[in-house]
Length: 410
Image 1 (cartoon, rainbow, N blue to C red):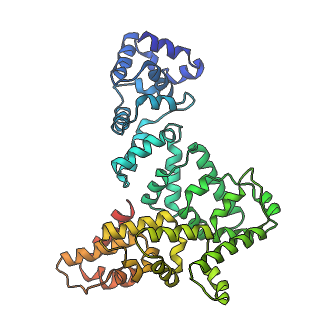
Image 2: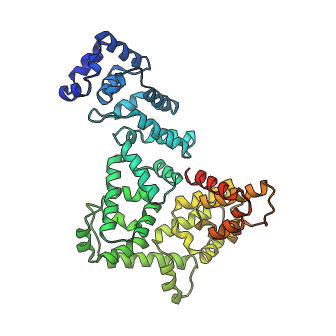
C-alpha cells in the first residue's frame, strides 16, 4: 500500500494535488483502506496509480459502482485488465459512468455477446483515449444525418486501426470540406450515411489546394463526389492529385466495361444513358454485383435484377449483405425472391420490419385485412398504408407509433 501512495506522489505534483485535494483530507489509514478495496478487485499497484491520477474521485466514498461494472464487462468479454492499463493516459480524465453507459448502449443497440466482445477486444484503445465524449458526439452526428443505430454498430465493428481522435477529426473535416464546396445538405447526408468509415479514414487536402490541382470548380467537384464518393481517397494529404478530367475518363471507362461485360447494355447507343443511371465506380459495381451473386443467385438473374432496378448497385456491399440477411433470416423468404422483386434492396430493413409488425398485429387482433404480398406491403406509400391499414383499427395509430419508436430507435 505504501508503494502505491509513494507512486502517486511521484506524478506531476501540481496537477495531482489540484485534483486530489479532497482525497488527501482523509487520514492515512482511511486512504490505505480505500486503495486496498480496489486492489482486492484484482488491480495492480501500477494500475491503481494511473487510475487515481486519471480518476481521483474513485477514492471518494465507497468503491465506485460504475467502475466495478466496467471491469465486469471487460472481464466477461475476456479482456485482460492489464490491457486497460496500457491504454490509460495520465493526461486524460475518465468518467466511468459515461463509459459504462456507452458499453451498455452498444449492448442494447443490437450487438450480441460475440460482437461486443470483438469490438472491445479489437478496439479497446478507442474507449480509453479520453474519447468517450467524442464517440457520443459521433453517434449523435450520424443519427442526425439519418444513420440507424444498426448501421453505426456495424461501422464500429469495422473500425480502422487508427486513433479515434484522428478518425473524428477527419470526419469533421470531410463535412467542412463538402460544406465549403457548397454540396447540398441532402447529398452530404447520403455520403455520410453510406460510408462514414471511408470519410473518417481520409485526411483531405484543403479545398483551395484541390481546386487548383484538379482544375475544377466547386460544382464539378460536387458532381464527381456524388457519383463516386470513393474518389475522396485520392484527394488525401500527401497524395498526387490527377486532373479531374483524367479521373472522369478513367471512371467512365471502368463503368462502361462493367456494363458491357455483364451484358447489361449491348448497344453502344445505350451506354451514355446507362452510365448516367449507374452512379458510382466500376470497381464498386463489380464488388456489389458479386455480393448479390454470392448470396445464392445466378449471374444471369442478377443481371436481370440490375436491369429492372439499377439503383440497387448504389448501396454498399455491407448494406446489401445486411438487407439480404434480413430477408432470409428475419422475414423468412428465400433469396430467390429478389429475382422477382429486386427493388426490395432499395428499402430499409426498418421499413420492412415496421410494415410487417403492423400488418401481423392487425391480423392477431382478428382484423379482416386483405392479403398482401411482401412487395405490396412495403411498396405502398406511408399515407396509403396508414389510411388503409393503420387507421382500420381504433388502437392502430398508437400501436404504429409504438412500433415505429421501438424499431427506429434500436
